[in-house]
Amino acid sequence: MTSWQGRTVFITGGSRGIGREIALRLAREGASVVIAAKSDTPHARLPGTIHSVAEEIRAAGGQALPLAVDARDEAQLVAAVARTVETFGRIDVLINNAGFLGVTPVAATTTKAYDLMHALNTRSPLITMRECLPHLAAVQGQVLNLCPPINLDPGWLGAFAPYTSTKYAMTLLSLGFAEEVKARGIRVSTLWPATLIATAAVGMTAGEAGLAVSRTPAIMADAAFALLSGAGQGQVCWLDEDILRTTGVSDFNGYANDPANLDRIQRDFYIGSF
Image: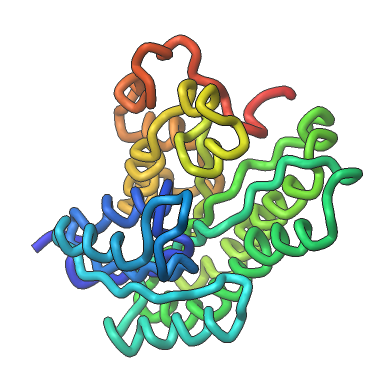
């Protein structure tokens, strides 16, 4: 029996990309994984549904509960948390992975787009942390939020302030929640990639050229597993490279999405100066 057997992970937006990779990483350790995402049916342009990932989780050795959830809908999130406890009896880890990437400046951002960014990047994590709190407290569980360290470089602030404001708000919520719940034995961490990651979102915004200079989602999954397994105690915000270095990993070449571009891997948003 591994240390993850009998433990339940609730993850939002886990039907593809980084979320799917984290789910499968934990499933290989024997975890029960709840995939709470909107993708109940196949998308015309994007791979993966909650059901296909559930099958992958089971094949990897974990238990799966696919739940069709729009992370903008409070009632659906509340019901999903309740269904998780009803099914597995506990929640050990909450992972807020669902989000919306919008790389537009204020002048080009519609109210509808900003509402979507805010709903997924800030409002949804608040709801899930609040609703999971009593269950996490019962087992001294963990929260992992996928959001960046706060970098006030003027270049990044001016590039796409609407998206930045919602992701930084998620980071602030994480820092505050970590302080709020530490006396109850709950650990809160944030994780962000040091480089571009080859996901559908990056493909849609940066195209094939962006994917060619990205790393695979596996680096984020390995970093998340390290954090959730106890690495990095005493610090909330982490980059994937930095937490992996604490475990002795220093060679990241194997994570290159295109090995021919090892010397061209692009640093991610908010890392360094604009």
